[in-house]
Length: 348
Image 1: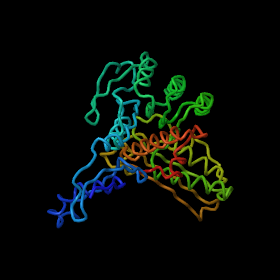
Image 2: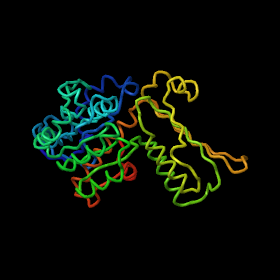
Image 3: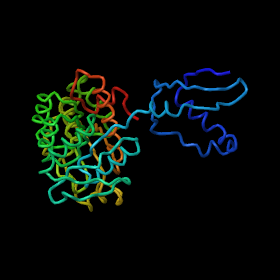
Image 4: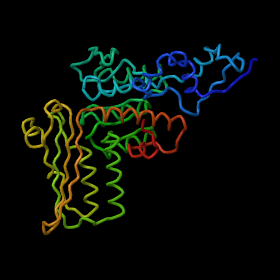
């Protein structure tokens, strides 16, 4: 008897694998690895024409209909692909099933080079090619989103270019003139996620600090603060995360200037003083915030240590997916940060 069922896509996947799993049931629980990046949401549905009887398995599927129902991968451009952070974002994007456009901006010395990341060839374009390259990419991919992990002195120029060409972007680069950055994006009425911190769990910590500073202003009045942060030697500026946490402590009544932050960039000190594993000297973020009461009898310590770059790369991809959703829904709000992403539950 022929009939039509409307099935969730995840159920369809189980039916297609049923015969294979019957022979491997005893080892299934050890070998099964659930998909980390599903291609379809729970709300997506597909009508399938099925010919069957009550006692037979599904015998036919409308493959053409399934192909049409699969959403196109979100195209993203990652700047810059020559850096370790940019490469980590590309790899995370590939793992998430996004379409990485084969172009990236870099310095003039790297212009014309091709680098392979995650099995994909990415061509580097120098400063003189940026505008024409971006216009061409936007014509090919109208829903393009840029993820920017470049250098502090490129923040404002890059943002101005993205606004001029109308390409939404995720700005993970720290530094630059932040007030000018926001002003540029606001005037262009462009969608963007701007955050000095892309790590999901660190973002949650920052959100908690922000809530505490607003609900209990002056709670640490009179306390002295020591801040130590260690990053790879190539990081030129003070961590944006440290700046955000310090701002919260200032609202809590602590007197502290940014130039008091102890920046540890020497590898020997990082190993001996901070305890950074040697294999992560070229990619880590160790932060310590130590508070002491006026009489020295009470102390508080907040610390978060990150080895590698995957936590930031995954967060950047979450931000790009979040931004695409806001654009598609024509949200009134244009500029977001990672706390907005976290609050919406847009974390894979």
